[in-house]
Length: 273
Image 1 (cartoon, rainbow, N blue to C red):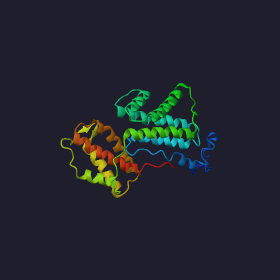
Image 2 (image 1 turned 180 degrees about the vertical axis):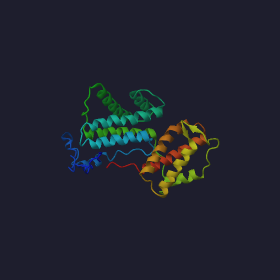
Image 3 (image 1 turned 90 degrees about the vertical axis):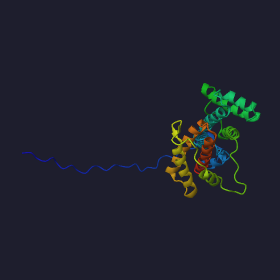
Image 4 (image 1 turned 30 degrees about the vertical axis):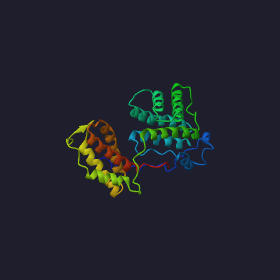
């Protein structure tokens, strides 16, 4: 006679490890830089990312700034911060000079053309030599103190700001530039002949619609996290497409859209905390 299998007993409940994880230990080599990690904010407070930087440049500069802060816990991060900041510098120089020459040549050309001062060029080249020395094993990843790294990263921030040029001035009487640009854009007709046109795989009219909706939401009701991420995706698409638009009105139309998107996104860039 067949019998039913025994009824299984209750499944064991998972056990949770309720121990508090170990907190990072300050690196003793960073002693004297700041009394605690919170105070590292003041060390990097002057490293302000230009508001008209592309997403790639903004990300590289922000990461270099944060690496300096976290050198409180890992001393080598200070030197790595300088190397990482050079990604932004090389990118901006290559675009400004329309050249894919090595970084040393780009820095020299920028000085020759008066885009940066000779003194600033020397500081930038010092950063390059540090990077090259690390690559050859001739320099140590602990070559710089956090304070020394800040001075070099600041040179890169300054150079990028000069190369990008100042963003257009705010309204003289304190007007909101984003709101003003939005009104201009709202009234501007969409470029004739560019409906259904894709540039670098980006359909322009859809990109215009998506970006405009997000900018308007930022002006009327501050964007949440998901919509901010969507805005960054629009910025990446604009950075890809705009340089390839060769019709004057269309290029100006989408450059204004890119400026608006950058201003809206900049409101959500975290400060050094």
